[in-house]
Image (tube, rainbow, N blue to C red; front, side, top):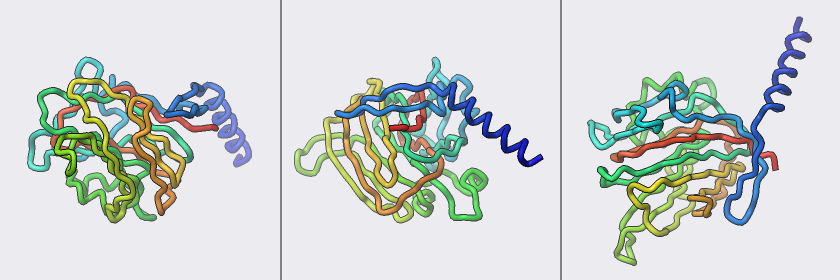
Length: 238
């Protein structure tokens, strides 16, 4: 019986692989062969997601609409319910709405809980407060507009951190995000290395001290009204 079940699982894996959408992604100066393993246009709202926080969430003209400007916490983390592993690319479209003054486009990558507990099953113990996510393993990417200390103007600030511990690993400054413009963000994950791209242009890359090979991805929004679409996770095969 065990041999039969094992054979069925092998056939299902082969069938899924055969029908996986293969494509080439151009990121910076390099091209990567990828196979799509998850895709969500948010037409069904949060069917594939789990939210932690007090933001208002809905679907607006095919986009996931997240308004975290109000509330006691004024933030939300939205976990994709699927767990992912191995070299991969995570990407999505995002637009900062014109009725917000903040610009947080943040992401938790390959998050997991210590052995013996579950990230999703412990969701009810978190209310979306930022420090709650600094105590378990994840790669944290923060993209937002901040005043530059030297140039005396607002610029896009990239910060790449390692949790637990909220340790800053990489930081960079770029031209500021434009409210109302649609951006395409990509995270190339080749643990322990992660690279961040905005509209195909590399913003930064970090080689972390810890190698996380499996975990969950979560959108993180703080005091910001933004919308999301075309969330895709792909296996990097080359």
